[in-house]
Length: 329
Image (cartoon, rainbow, N blue to C red; front, side, top):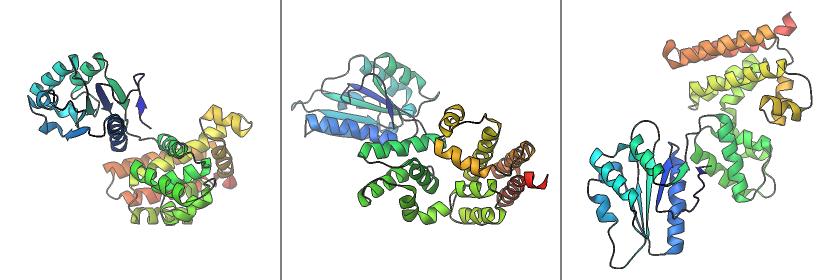
């Protein structure tokens, strides 16, 4: 979910939505528009790309109206505004017009930082919309989507949905909406599997699970199916790395209950149980070999080799063999 600052009034004179997650940026705008139309059904909403906001345009859009109508002015890619237009916006920030809400969508980063700093200094409301690059962030997003609907989903169901759908937040949000609309009661892993079986089978995490379990043939089959259905190779190397690291973390951790280990290792308790089952054939040397294989595959799929598919197949076979290293000792 987008994170807001202490000024949580969507009708604040100026809001800056900062980040590159398009779904969260769009939701930030939608929240403001809903609030404005609730206050005045005739609210005039103007949405402009950065190149459309020329010097003088903001003054025209925010000038007093004979009908004293409320307006919402949305500027996308504000980091790309011209220097002269930035001067206009900075001047406006010092004395925003009544009944008008200015929304600046800014990617963050160094480009256009002066405008962002000026908005913050002027006390603008800020909504953080960061790109969700980590699986844990996407998992938290799915949980939040279910909570937002007032429905219950098991941790395994949330993980299965992320595994099946991938990194696209719009698709994840749409999948949650479909499940909530179609299924009564608690949503569990079986329900998710029933709806998204084909995609779950193509999941990068399925490849990783079969590999760390030592099931080379099944891992290779899942890998080829994943690649055939468009899963990015870099997503597969990421899943392999997470799977091997989880084995390494748990094998070096002190014994204890899943809940205690979950707090110590930063994993959900149900994942502790799953990794415990997967780690039975592993040794410390096997983990080291597998991590090297993942690093080589990662380099291979990012341009360091001629055949990303071969690099992944080699890594999967090496990991599966490492998973059985204890039995060969």
